[in-house]
Image (cartoon, rainbow, N blue to C red; front, side, top):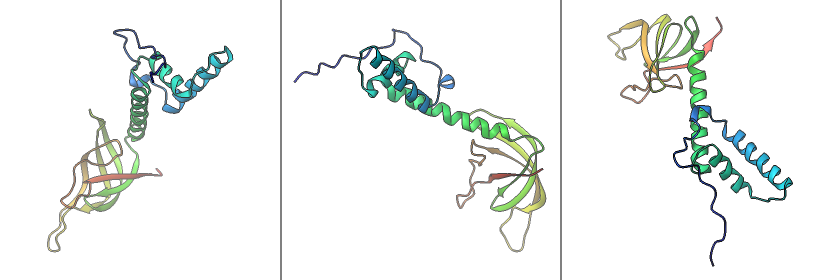
Length: 172
């Protein structure tokens, strides 16, 4: 049996897809496909929802719905990451852990870095002992650390814990 389903239109040769940063959320794109399907249905052209999703993808310059959906989801995740990091401001009061020790402190510096990372300098309310040895201590009260989009250090201790994790903001 031969499949007679028409081949969906392809973007024009050399067409540039809409930049991922400019894409609506996957839910908004699905809603757009639903509206397209409803409008075509009013004019007597019935298409499946899957076909409508593919048409939306082609309109935006993407090869297919899966490619568009992945780009849109990545864009949404990037927006969340940017939101988390832009919320961290000089003077913020934060709580978290540093080398396994709980801390409360103040953000003294924030520097945006590439790859979704941010470098922060914190001043702890109380010095934190960074040595796990009964007969020796080394206290730190001001530290700088690189954090990822979840405000967790990619660097790990030998037992796998992140060097630093900012868990929540405290009231000022």
